[in-house]
Amino acid sequence: MFILLTNDDGVNADGIMAMEKELRRFADVITFAPDREQSASSHSLTLNRPLRIVERGDNRYTCDGTPTDCIMLAVHGILKHKHPDMLISGINHGANMGEDVTYSGTVAAAIEGSTLKIPSIAVSNTDAHNIDSYRPAAEFIARFIRQYEKLKLQPGIFLNINFPIFENKRFTRYLFTSLGRRKYNDIVIEKTDPRGKRYYWIGGESTWDHIEGSDFEAVSDGYVSISPLKMNFTHLEAVEALKTIKLRF
Image 1 (spheres, rainbow, N blue to C red):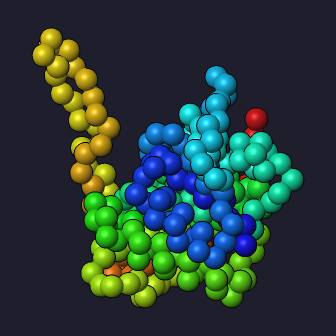
Image 2: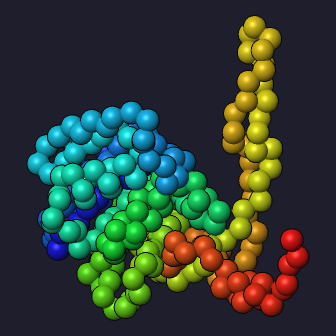
């Protein structure tokens, strides 16, 4: 198996290092990740300046761009005609659930891989500050990949996997889930600098709606959440309903 590995936390982040080590036990791996943290970069491409690729060892590359840049440069630049069997994005430092997937650079890399017809998986770790949790998460993904064909996923579907707080020797419990819904509070924080000028942080606190079958519900209950996602945002039922409406101009 030939796997393309990336992330949005940077090429030397704990999560991608653990994932790379585990994948190299059974697969050929090319790692191509940003040279610095690119969290919340979403599906952005760098179009207003040139990008530079730096080789960081055997089949390890980095660039000064976004996760999506990395996939584009890897597939169309480094690899050219060699198509990866799978793309893994992660392991992200922190969860990517619900609406957060629209902001996530981790998920965006999986979206780009799926667009390029590569079976793709975004992987995130709720237990981000627990270094001991990354190896068991990587081992779970390795076991999961070996069984991937059982899923019989249609083209254009990619997976978003989130790990719960690590409480045992290994992750074994999982649920197939849908995206949850987050409630944002104080999303923009206003402060004043020493010169009396206002500045702003985007952040704040948030809570989750408890929706049965959601990714947040699964992770809260100690399960690995596996959500099948797709890029096509079209609401097909709405399209059919709208066709019955006559507008005048």
